[in-house]
Image (cartoon, rainbow, N blue to C red; front, side):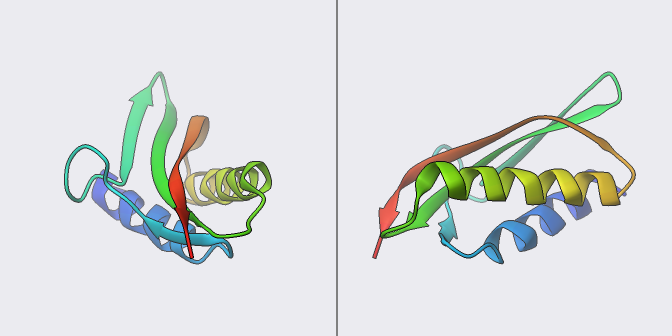
Length: 90
């Protein structure tokens, strides 16, 4: 799977997670998911806003697990999946 297709699938996966208000792009528009490849593994930095009242550590863990599943489902090995919570929204 090419990188853009994987990014799109990761975005869909993250947006479907209960408790994620939305994906955000803190540095560059459209860059809420950044992939990195290193020695046969795929890493990701994902920027989100959490819904008000969510347990942020639990939400981050859930999002991280779902991204790992998505990468592995597409034949990759996941390593270094970082979830950056950029704030909370009502």
